[in-house]
Length: 330
Length: 267
Ligand SMILES: Nc1ncnc2c1ncn2[C@@H]1O[C@H](COP(=O)(O)OP(=O)(O)OP(=O)(O)O)[C@@H](O)[C@H]1O
Ligand SMILES: [Mg+2]
Picture 1: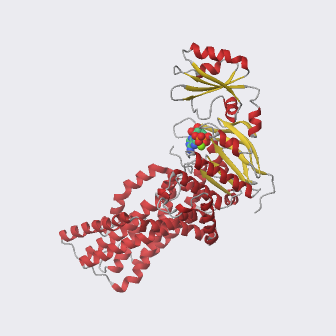
Picture 2: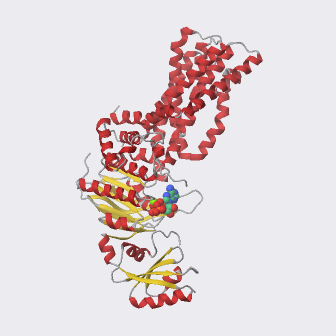
Picture 3: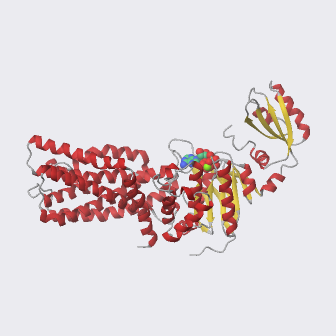
């Protein structure tokens, strides 16, 4: 069965997913997602913890049924045509502990390729090629249980690539990786995309820089809804008229909620530093800065340093979601 | 049977067979524990002054125990553990299906388990001079194969039940362990339970299989049912479990997708 020649790699209409737990309140993980991802796109999904990113991916890879709405991947309905769809997709999740610890890296990759029915000999050659590419060839005979998390994650990525999926789903593929390993993963994803214009990647992430650098378009998801969807440049452009200020403030009471309530403050986030806390506020104009400083000092906290800067994707995110991405449940 | 099906079976059996070689500590668990258990039963019979035949009983039962434990612990609970490790998700989204995945687990397990059963039989026979009716060896092997296939069919069926009911089913299986040993007559002729209880116990394929094998190998054993009837019932059970396993896995997958239970998340 061939997919209808459609320009969309993914289309969802009014996608909703509600989890019902025994004895608990139902959780609305997705609340009406409309998406249209083009073939050949590297599409990012950015959102705070619990936004529904993983739920969206699990529905698209046929692991989870939508509660309402429809989703098509590569022209095939994820509920009705799931059998025809499965050979065309792959999923790799960050921090995944899949496989069997006593297998070697090569054996494990071969094992998973067999679930796609790939002939052993060519697939083994392909595995070696990818192992070289990701710098894992030396570790090819090492037991999976003896890999570092960076190596394991690269091995998992290879698992997703060797079956040559038309749409590849990456759920936080660089989570918990050091800078070098994360870069290797990003470089390989980009390279794999560039190899064939028909390939599509959906990637969820917490890293703003990663989304900015890698993705053609980004959907910012919050509480199960799409808060914004555009290219990284356009998302940043939307906050350019606003002022972004970084402040180091001395320790003291929690001031985030008060600051967010100040007239003219579009968003605010805070990060704990060694001696001070680093505050980033987005203001509708320069004039608001005076009010912000007064508010901080009124809480008995000192403003140690203050810098104005260019808008980044992070500011766009804060502007849209109202809080920082790593600031769950505040 | 298509290639994907066969490749899946081989690939899924691979880590099982390999694990056996790569973890020598398993050797001890796999061989020493059942041998010791069988030994204990043999000495109980000896102490009671039971006829020699009963020693053969205990030895055959000990060998079969290896398979039962394997079915319950390795087959039925495997999908459940695979979910926690994230493997189940990968099996499900692959073009293959859970039936060959489960079959692969079964085949991978048969080899080491058969070795274990053979060790128990060899050890028991040499140490206690158990005599078997050697002419009945081939039919006995046939019954053994039938019983084994039945057991694995049961394991696959239980696999989907376990996956769906999670820890509750696991606790239940745990609690059922001892009664099953009793009912299936692992260590004594099941007929001793009384006719009806024994027939009830016959839903466990091991009960009939053991009884049939004992009739063949240890002439003079008390029989539960005539040999031919036992073999026929085993055949019917095999067909039933095959259907149950396939339907169970398919239905389970559909329900789990609806309820979010395929997703590896401890919630
Ligand atoms: N299997 C499940 N059962 C019940 N609730 C769930 C389940 N999976 C997710 N949820 C809930 O659904 C919501 C969305 O979760 P999801 O994992 O999709 O978010 P996420 O954006 O991937 O978050 P994270 O950044 O932490 O990975 C959360 O409130 C979560 O608690
Ligand atoms: Mg997630």
